[in-house]
Amino acid sequence: MIQKTYYKTKDYCKVKFSFAPENAETVEVLGLNSDWENSIILKRKKDGTFSTEVNLPKDSQHQFKYLVNKSEWLNDTEADEMAPNEYGGTNSVIKI
Image (cartoon, rainbow, N blue to C red):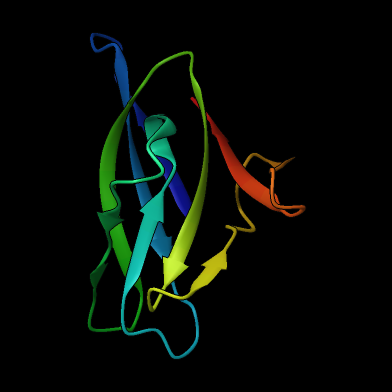
């Protein structure tokens, strides 16, 4: 799930990422702000979902993917759209 919170007086949007892949021990999100090297770690909740909140600039768009258990790359089915990547697959896209 992707939840966006806009503020009238701020130049950013707070975005909450929630993801619940099967058999996950760790979940990270990569690609936001074009940063594919530094991940944002999602915290595990009691119900088994993983989540984090980030601030992203208004009027921007970002490709991203989840990295599960340091080995499996997954897209978010609730992303605004998908974009082809250089590896023959797709990345999730969020539009702010």
